[in-house]
Image (cartoon, rainbow over the protein chains, first blue to last red):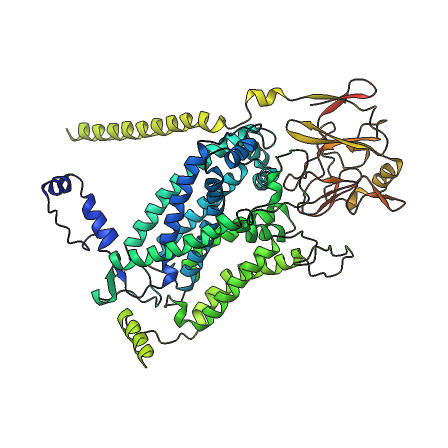
Length: 428
Length: 195
């Protein structure tokens, strides 16, 4: 952590403060002078983008909470009040709702980037695991936020997800009743979800603090996956990466605002503009797009408890990734076989997303039901099952095996060598 | 002298550990109100029973009422539905237990054990899929009674594809249990009290 800073307080106040709280030194050492590999590509800007999105979500969320009412009789109308009456309420709500989707797009890119370049491998295991914790908190936060507008999808999404806990043997029903504060999703549930939805982003911010701390102990990984060997391999974070991150953040904001202004409801569900009705389940309930792959895994297992276990396992397995990969090299840039399987894995995750979006017994990517004749039909369910199999097969078999047997390509001796070779290629 | 010192040390250890234990127990006790406050409160528990007159429900008609925040299906079954439910052998069932709060827990899921004797046309049960809590759709699913190609009775859950038969028993799909029958009793010949 220390040793990156040449901070010397210059003013009398600076000196006075430094002796009491060396915060300026911390900022300079960790936020400005911090030695960062000189070869980071744009995939590395998503950390900064994510931090920005967290701030956007907290700011818009605090404002929305000033106008929202967490009560079953008033919640839906208060959201419409925000949309129609509150000055710029429509903008702030659309920013918050689409902001959640943007947050997840960025986090998925960030996670896949970590997977491709082996950022989870030693000595960054704890950094990676804190990241998985952050992702779990994000999912919980987004889930509770989606309940607050109290539309049909809010209600039934919440009902299905909280019912997952009823699969736990013996204590399952007691746990769901405890979560609901009743015998169904009702006012007590809405109230506590509002309270927790306000709390969790700050827990998230604290976890992000730990994530950055754990990042600043070993320093950044980089596209070559080779450790920093000398000061030649690095640049100070400021201004090189502050500017690069800023550029990427602005580009991302353009993408984000395109959704907010031109397609604010595309990522949501029309039926959520129907007030919650505890007596009627919509014909087709689906979670938000960012949960679809996990929803597909849940539905792939024809047993209630089994489905729930598979779904949670699909995320918890990420904690073990640093030890499943036994390759001496980090970056897949020099691991040709891992690279192929990485892209297959990405495609499988996308397929899982589609598999979670349709009715289980419909033909895949169609609205037509397959006949219930016991024969083989290429349905959403079958695709979900095949993709679920591959998801676990990837982590439990392919990664350990391939990382052990693959013939790696020759990695450069240092980051500088890799950068210079690239410059040479461009010149030639 | 040395024995006294020795006693002093063990006594300190004891106090040290005892303090820790009391502190831990106190923390655990203090935690309980904060956990238990999330359980159903008195106002929620107070809404625990409803009364209903069955007479206006025509044969072949089903209604849904709300009890403790959840839908309850009340269906006046046709003879075809009752016959279809009785024709099923308990060995064919996914969940062999009656799941009826009014009979013994170990009773088998025969049609008789799902209703009240002499009132078997009235099927009363929770409209909450035992998979993940959606409300199944009536007169639907692969196990409805077919009369002139029209489905009577039977339920299908649109969320994850569970099929229930004309006695509300799970037959196909991910749901693990039959739709539960809540505690209810006949106050008069046609009037029931649920809860």
